[in-house]
Image (cartoon, rainbow, N blue to C red):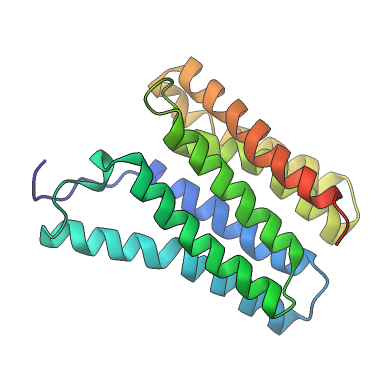
Amino acid sequence: MAGGTQKLRVADFLPGVLWGGTFVLAAFSSGITTPAAWAWGAGTVLLLLVFPWVLVRTLDSRGDLRSSIARAPVTPVILGAGALCFILLRLILWLDGPRVLAAAVFAMLASYAVVLVLARAVKLDWPSVSTGAAVVVIPVLLSALTGGFALPVAAALLLCLLLVPQLRTGWQLVLGSAAAGAVVGGGLFTLLQGLPA
């Protein structure tokens, strides 16, 4: 579709919702005050999710992009996402922000990089990769917030149920993508959580 916009599906918003929730939970699980947690969580969502989405949708709808973002080369997309994440990570460091939020940002960036880097060799579904990462990351954050076991397990089961509607695209693609997200995004987040501050 040259010069036109693509029709958005519900699955197109799933990664943004999952990562947005992850960033807000990460800010709250860090133990900072409630106003600071809202500022860090909402600020991260605006910088890493809302701003890029609005910018790309606006440029694409006006026809200012040479080709659709879906056909963009991998390197500029990774560099752009990496630059925004680097800015945020520097802000977290300079302002002594929540380190758990930095771990969540790294998890998202690693998950996205896997999708983009492997795009030529293996097809991965970004909503399923995000869901797989969320199945690991969100229960860990809820466990830190509540200190309990029931809510994290319920969240993990609910997140697994989010994969069911996506199975229409093929169960191998969905489950393989979710496994990649759990291993790369969830694994990196868990690893970074275990490092000393």
